[in-house]
Figure 1 (cartoon, rainbow over the protein chains, first blue to last red):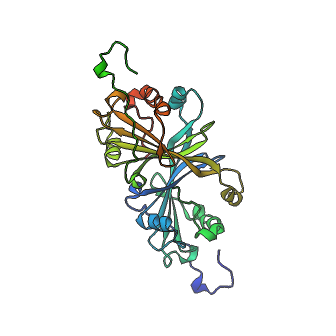
Figure 2: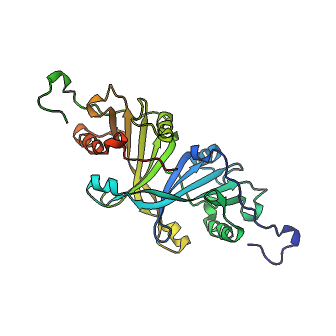
Figure 3: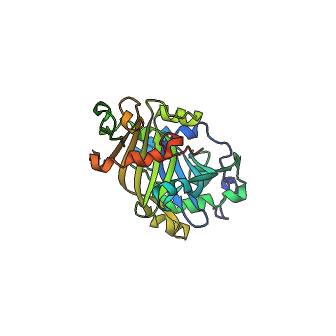
Length: 153
Length: 153
C-alpha cells in the first residue's frame, strides 16, 4: 500500500478497527446485499446518524464520524417459508458469520484512505493479515469514497 | 375467511392498510430476505419501536401498536461489484418494487387475525382483490402470530 521510496516517518502501518462500535444494531438501514458463491452471504448494511445523513444528502467523501456496518449471515433456504409458499424460493438469515465496520477518521486512518476497517467473528476482531486486503479492494471504489454500498430508497 | 353460518353483524369485511405509516424508513432492522424465482426480490424488514421491543423480548402475540414493514427491491446483479470482486457473486437492490406493512390492532383488524395488511407500489395501495390472499397465507404462520420474519441478531 505504501511506496518503498517514501520516508520512514510516513510509512504508517494500517490501523484497524478492533473494538465494536456501540449501539450499531440500532442504526438505520442503508441497504441489503446477497453475495452468492463461496461467501453464500445475506447481509444488512446499517449506518450511524452521520452515515445516514451523508447518504441521504449525497455527501462524498463521507465526513469524519461516519460509521457503516455490515451484518452478515449465511444465506439459508427457509424450509418453513417454502412449504407455505409452495415453492423453494425463500432465503433468510441463517447463523451470523461476521460483522464488519468502516469508520471514517481521516487522521487516525490516513494510511487507508481515511477509513478504518473492522471484521469481527463471535465478537473478536480478525488479525492483521486477514485485514490487509480490505483497503486495496475498497480503494477500487474510489469514486464513492471506498464504499461499495449505495443507499436503498 | 368467515364461516357462512356466522351472524351477519360479525361478517366484517377485512380492513386493509391504505396509508403508509410515517417514518418507516427510519425504523430499526428486523431482518433481510431474498425471495428467488418469480418474485426475484431482495428485501429488508424493519420494525417500529413496539415491534423491535416485542422481537427482542420474544413477545408473542405482538402487542397492539406493532408495525412491521418490508421494503422490497429487484434482486439485481451488481456488475460494478462483480468486476472488482472478480466473480459474478454480488446481488444488491435494484429498483424498488413494493413496500408492505403489517399493523397490529386487534380491534380494527379483528377480521384478519388482528393484523392489517398493506401493500404499496409507487406510494399507492393495492386493491382489495390483490390484498385478500395476505391473511390466509399469513394465517399458516399462526405459531408466530402470523408473522413470517424472525429477528436476525
